Image (cartoon, rainbow, N blue to C red):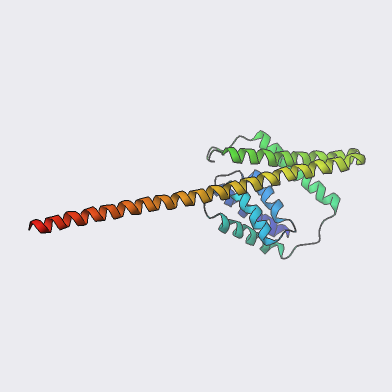
Length: 211
């Protein structure tokens, strides 16, 4: 993705997350991490739904598709992939800034209180990024420990992915239960309405007989 396109997407994503009363500094890097993979469109949407469902309960699928569309617009003119050293340096800098800002900034007053699920997800993401930053530094000091650091980083990523999948499954179950409950409630309301109609008909019939 070109620099101007990347900045445009970052600004749009930040505004979108802020409008949803969530912490864009936490969720933006993770969302972009999902987008910047070789996964299929369906897999990316599924992964995005796991994140977005922690932020909002409305228009989840539509928002995920919009995020993917905005990203794809900027990815059409993608430049040559940077070297590993440059890429690692960029990641280190970004993650370091992210962690420092999270440690020093108090929550914004206008943001809605985080749910337990959001807090757990944020902790897992921060743990992953903290490990990534630490592992890269260790690699510079001792190459022999690189394999161990990479394994720990992969394990942390797997933990986050597993947690997202579990929450996605729980959200699906909650959604299904809610639909069933809503259906049951509608049936009850319908039955009550029919009962009221029957009573009204009987009352009307009695009045006509008296005449």
